[in-house]
Each structure stands twice: as C-alpha cells, then as structure tokens.
Image (cartoon, rainbow, N blue to C red):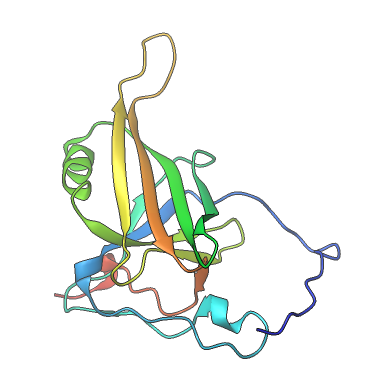
Length: 177
C-alpha cells in the first residue's frame, strides 16, 4: 500500500447523521454481489461501482427509520495479523402494525445486504456475500406518559472495511414481476 495525503474538509459541508430510511435486500435475492474495485487511484478500493444483480422480481426494499434515531459505526476487531471491521447499525421503526410485526419476526432469521444513506446521499453498504448483515429487532410499547412505541433495529456485519455503493439501485417497488 502506498500512503497518500488525507486533507480536511477545507470548508466543505461534512453534515453528520443518516437519512430517514435504509434499503434492504435478502442476501439470497442476488445472483451477483459486486466487490470494490482493485486499488488504483486513492479511494478507489473503498467504492463498489458495478451494479449488484438481483434475481427476477427482486430488488431493494425501502424501510423507514425515524430521523435522528439511526447511527452507523465501524470499529476495528480482531488481533494483530488478523484485523477486520465490525459494522454496527441502529435505528427505530415506529408502530406495531401487522406488517411491521411480521417484518420483525422474519428478519431475525435472515442475512441481509443493507444500504445506509448518509446525510449527503452517499450509500454505505453493510453486509456482503458470505458476510451478511444480521438484524435484531427489539420492541418497546412505551408508556402512556412518555416514550415511543415501536422497534429498535440493531444490525451487525463483519467486513474488511467500510464501503460505499455507487451502482444502480433497483427498488423492489419498480420491479415488474
């Protein structure tokens, strides 16, 4: 690896936080999950530019997350000569509608690939082929006097790094069966 200069923001926006949704797809919904480009220009190996390929009638599902309840973190894990990254996500999905209850019941046993948009619209990919993101929903009814009713969704995935996805985003709602 060649080191290269990393400069500050130089006055450009660096808005913290995430947008109020994530894009989810089951790991089994893909025929091809692309990988980042090989090292080249600085930053190239941290970006997935090719399009992921879905099976027929499959695509990304947009899932609402309460704004300012969600956070993405990436921490180094492992030991010397064997380090990786543990990516963690947390967000809140309000309510207890039947559709939300079914989602929480089924997602706990599935591996997903998740795209998480930051405030600027960049898409971080959480999960990859063979190392999917695992989601763990936790329900809270809230109290009459305070709190909120719904699901805190926590997700974890292991990876070699944090990657941006710049390929096509085919939403399930736009897929024609």
